[in-house]
Length: 197
Image (cartoon, rainbow, N blue to C red; front, side, top):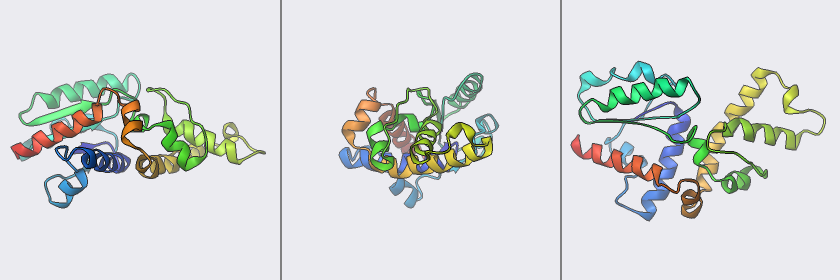
């Protein structure tokens, strides 16, 4: 399973555990990895380089990439189309900007004691990092931080969003944030590909 980074693995393993507990026909990615039925390959956010790289192995592949913003989105759509032309390979682009956008604000509030407000195409990690920082610093604001400090704090927030906040998700919260069952469709596809291995 090809994903952009380690945070995606954290999100997907935790959310699959939640969904598998409710519907055992959906794969539990933790169990699949433990049983050597699945290997996560974090590619550090460069999907274009991986469109054909694994083809010589002749194994089923599932690729999941964040939508991000234009022109990155269009490049990723081309990569997805290339992968989907190969036998037993499936690639998908999230409909939201990133996996963090599937989190419910309540799950984040339970961890950070802030009331985040974000849309499907907003950078959730940056929004939450700014709110947390501004909420805990009366004498200094986010805008006064260097770009490097902002990136460092955003990465720290990104970690707990994909671990602790995901663990606060419930089925009703997930259904509210993903009413079309997009995450379930990813898991169903992974399960189908695993049967072809």
